[in-house]
Image (cartoon, rainbow, N blue to C red; front, side, top):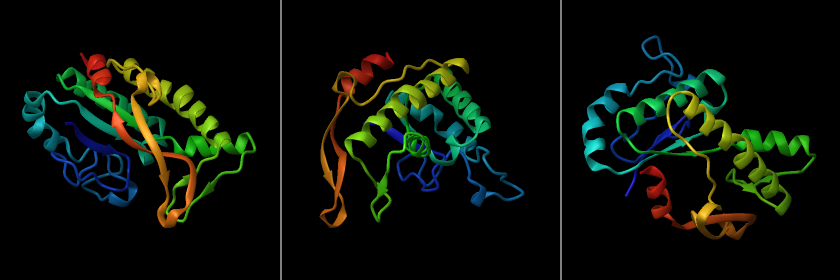
Length: 196
């Protein structure tokens, strides 16, 4: 079992102990008391720290959305991860990269379509570029950033050591969204070995 929360996404996590919280506020959340992109949940994290440490469960942090759009936010994120690690927490970062994928698709003149629900329809060519961007660029930038901030990080993908096993996902209304999968199994023993 994992504890999880979201960084930089406008949708709030609904997973304990950070119910309804995101580490960073967005511009929409800003007020004079809570400027954009600060950590309004520091007290929540501090009050939960002892229970998080004693549970010894890894914490999964989804890094994406607004937090990926600024070098300042990226540096803060990496420092936060390094700090959480220094407090004895085992952290797994799962990152996005949609804007970076879209940018590379445009540079390579590859058309990309989205379903009405916002899901990218992924052809073989789109998946090849997405893997190149996520595994070869975003993933390595995130792991290097955390390491440079004093943390420990390696970048892996769902293909490494059969980390993620998936079945083909069919979109709503039976729409074929291409090479998109639904995760059926996570090789947690592989992750646990890396976290030791």
